[in-house]
Length: 342
Image (cartoon, rainbow, N blue to C red; front, side, top):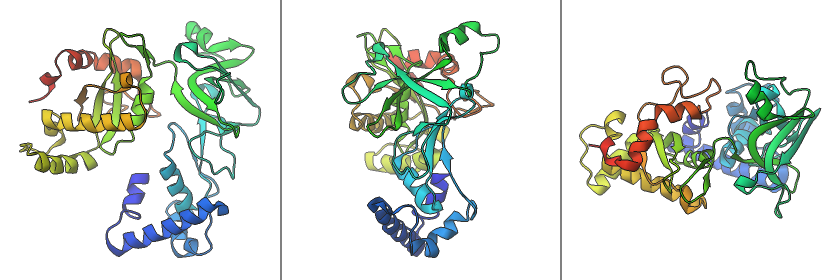
């Protein structure tokens, strides 16, 4: 949604793009000075029209499932003249639980517990998260309230694992409580795997970082416990990857005759350039050395719900299914990564 709308506004060619960028910069400056999401001049001239893309009666906007980048959240706030907060919930919590309050214009957090909802953190020592950490409390989110489900159908062991007693439900998500009281998701507990040196890897943490790369549409990070680094399956974004491939092939004298995504995904030189670029993102995000992927497989077929069935209906990665689907690929990335490229 952001990519489509920004392409015809902020990134539009010619005078149209210049006007949108100028209006956005002036309104954002006004907003960051603490004046709220409305502007006395630019709303009437520009942003009432962009708000009408959705509705002139728009009262609120929320985002869930995955965290918003600050620049995306600002874009939504400016273009639709609305707070635009984030929230957190699961199927097990009836999709609700935690959310940013109206008027909260902070970033990178999911807000505070909703009415009738209790939230606490519990230590996760194997990941180094403790509720008595010096900077701020960190640990697994546990939720209690009338919104919590009763049990998993015909899965008593799973129910026993997640229901802690006294109505508390363990979500599997790791969070910290910021000094202002807002909660921020920082990790995921259930998807951990261990490397040969004893380090625990959180693939979702790495995937979230990789997802910021403009050439990447989707990613799946995995590893083998006898190895000391993770590897990744990368689904490139054709809208950015193909133009990049044309540019980089000219710069680096990489011979390419076919610029289809399926053909480009088999090009070893391109894969190496993409890997270096992804590693740069990971390193600039202060990832530990053992969290930096050392080998990638370029998958030209996106993860989806109906065909390869690697996504849930809410578009989250099915990690166990992905492990099975790419089992031989992951092994191959360690033993002979060249086999995937011409």
